[in-house]
Length: 130
Image (cartoon, rainbow, N blue to C red; front, side, top):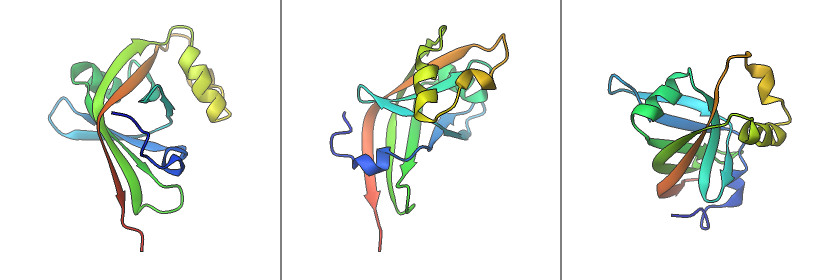
């Protein structure tokens, strides 16, 4: 599955909503920063967060990206997340460049950063603008 048919304006929105499966069976939603890289949605997470724990237990997830100007135009990406360590902040630093921030400034000395790369299994685009 690729993002070839997804309007680049949708993917330009700086914030997405990540939905993971919680340990109690309920969904857990989180606003995230992301980069589309190699036809994957890539986010930086810290090991201690609920979303990291949820994805480690069950990699199935969804990402929702709204058009920056209207919420009636959006893409839902359903997929499987692969979690890898980001020991040297290689990915976090590239994400920080997109958002003009230093991701390290959010972390303490013992924080472990992870790269969650979501392989899309299904991409749905909805456009109900008037």
